[in-house]
Length: 92
Image (cartoon, rainbow, N blue to C red; front, side, top):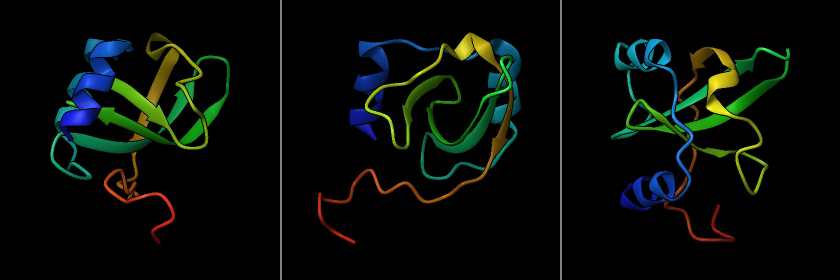
């Protein structure tokens, strides 16, 4: 989890206060982490997004970077799908 925090600090992509408050009321996927589906104002949807500390978009499954600005998110649906950040490469 510490790695996610430092990743978030490296490139801040912070949710709006409204979305942060919404996440505070939802169960976490793991300590300080929500996995959610996000919907953007453009109509695009990303089904697996990691959000740390209810505030920072830190990863999007399948992308080497976060391909959107957090302020473009219009809704968040917590899915709590397992992410496996701690898994070693090649481990299943």
